[in-house]
Length: 259
Length: 258
Image (cartoon, rainbow over all chains, first blue to last red; front, side):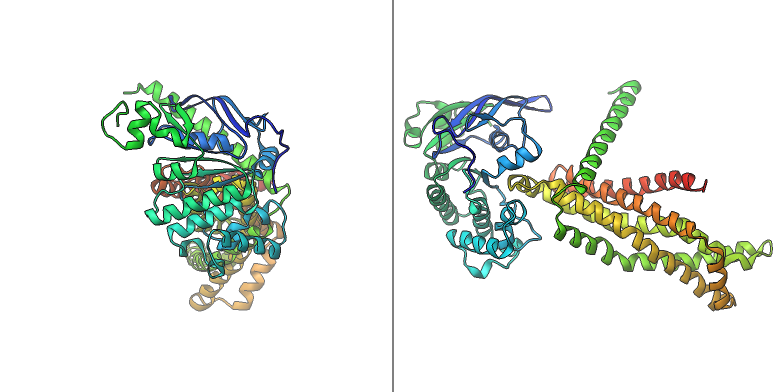
C-alpha cells in the first residue's frame, strides 16, 4: 500500500490560509480546512465558488498564491519534479469527466500508474486492474474495450477503479455524480463509500449534489465567496443555522446567495 | 481604447512572454528527452504515427515537385542553351532545399496539427492532470517521445523525398524531354556531393524538432475547450511553417560557408 510516513496524530491533509487569484479576481480568500485521517470530507458550494481550485491545490495540480498545503504535517506546497511525483503516489483522484486515456484500453487505464510509475510487470498489473474493475462491478468483458466504447456511468467506474488500483492514502473526488442519472449516481456513491472504507483512506470530495454529499461525507464544509462558511458533521447540516447553507441545501432561489 | 504606444508595449510584452514560455517549454522537453524514464512504447507509437503514416503525402509531394522543377529548369535553361544541366540543378535543388523544406512543411500540416489537437483535447478533458495524479510526468510521457520521434523520422522522410524528387525529375526528363535515362542518373550521381545531401538531412533534424515542438506547445497550452483546441491546431501549423522558413534561411547561411 502506498502511504507516506505518517505521524499518528494531526490531520492527514490540511490547507492553511490558502488564497488564489485569477486575472485579478480573488477566487480563494484564505481557506483553512483540515481532514483527519480516515475521514471523508465533502466540500459543497455553488458554481464558480472555488471548489475545483481548492481540490486542485490540495492535490498539487495548482499552486496557491498564499498559504500552505500540508500532508501528514509536512509542507508540500512548493514541491515539484520527482518529489511531487513521489507524493502523488499517495493520492488517487476520480475526475469529473473520468479523464480516461482515449488511446488505452480499459485495463491499461486502470493499471496506468502500476505500469508507468511503479514498474509493475504487465501480467501482474493486468491482474490487479481486473481485480480493481471487479470491485467496481465491471467484469472481464470490458477490460479490452476503449473508454469511448463505455457509457458515462461505466467510465466513472473505470475512473474509480483507476483511482484506487494502487491503494492510495488519500482519495479525491471531483463532482463524482455529475452527468449521471440518479440510479448510476447512487451506484457511484455506494462504490465510493465502499472503496474508502475498504482502503481506510482519507477522502475529500467536491460536489453540488446534496444527495451525493450526504451519502459519501462524514463531514460537510460549505465554500462560498472564497471562504469556508460552515463545517460540521453530515447529520447536522439540516440544523446548521446558517442561511447560506440552508438556501444551498434546499436549492432555493431566494436567499443571501444571489446568482 | 489603447494609445499606439500602449498597443506597441503590450504587443512587445506579449511577444517576450511567449518567447520565454516557448524557450522554457522546449528546455523542459529536451531535458525530459535526455533523462530516464524513457517511455519506449510511446516513442514507437510516435515513430509510426509521424513517420510511416507521413510517407504517402511526402512521397507524392516530392514526385510532383521534382517533375515540375525539371520542367521549369529545362525551360529556363533553354534561354541560354543550358538544358543539359537540368539533372544537376534538380538534384541540387531537391537535396539542399526542396526535399527538407517540403517534407517539413507537409509534416507541419499533418503532424503539428495532429499533435496539437491530441494534446489539446487531453488538456481539455483533464487527461494531462490525470497523468500528474498518476505520478507520471507529462513531459516525459507526451512531449519527449514526440520530439524524439520527429527528429528521428524527418531526416528519413527527407532522404525518401530526395530520392523520389530526383526520380520525378528523371521521369519527366525521360518521358517528355528526350533525355537518356542512364545518362541522367550518371550526371546526377557524378555531380552531387555528399554535403549536398547531408546538409539537407541536418536541416531536417532541426525542422523535425520545430514541427513537434509547435504541436506540443500549442496543444499543451490550449485553453477554452473545443474552440481552444481548434485555435491551438491553427497556431501550431502556422508557427511551425514560419519557423521552418526562418530556420531554413539561417541554416542555409551557415551551411553555405562549407
